[in-house]
Image (cartoon, rainbow, N blue to C red):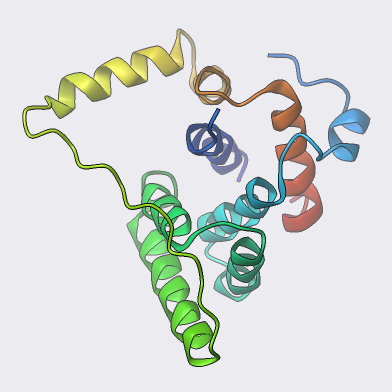
Length: 174
């Protein structure tokens, strides 16, 4: 689970706009560095990663109510396949689509959000991917890669503290 948490932190950093993390007491108290939508993303990613679909549904509802758009949630669930495996990602996508159908039947219209930008036809995806990985990772093993990647892509130290606090309070320490 710890490797999954590191992967989630890295992914969270990549989805946010925008090596010391302090004492545990500081980390666990302050979630204010993240807005409600950013906080809501954390249990969605964690329950997708753990395959806990019964806990994922309320997290998805919380995410929508906190301001995440349908497309933001869909894109995060798609991206999570690289960290959680295709079956868990696909199960989460199906659970989300079923939830959207339920909400629509109840007369709830969720904000769809922006569509993904098109990829230029002449883009060398392999070269671009290698460049992005090099920019995010710097040097070192997986721990350094994931934390460095998150920080290099815009995650701030206070947001990292808040991420850990939300993960512990809404998902659980284990």
